Image (cartoon, rainbow, N blue to C red; front, side, top):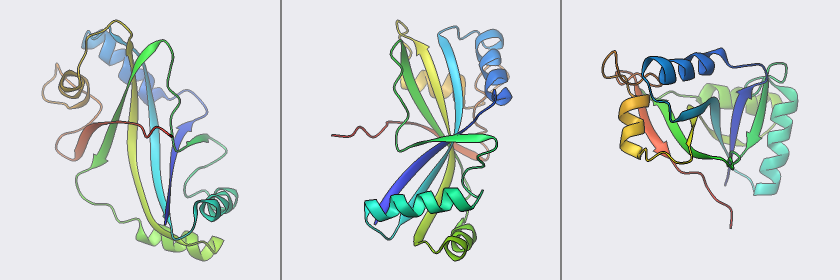
Length: 172
């Protein structure tokens, strides 16, 4: 079994991310945040070798809009680039209630003749912090991500979403 992770993003400016960054820096006063980007993250599990999974992924991307709409989105496979001049923090935001993507994966398998066994989607926020900031994980989660009052957090709704910092997989 092979897993491929796709980070999708808008080709045009992401107004949601721009507004969120403006609110974080101006309204909440967290000036250490120097950039904010939103990604849709798809985890695709194939019952194939890595090479065959990559071929099947290309088939899916070339023949459907279920994962990426090439008219308005682009994607990065498996790993987001690490910025040179900033501290990068990645925040995973996913629904608390389990979402079943089984019908979508079955539709993709029928249309593309692939062996997609599992499909999962969540949002990843890339927070770029000032290199000299001393911000820690708990501060990012409590101050920026989770809404607990009108003075804290805007990237996730704690009633319906889970929020956690994630580490990127680093190839050997």
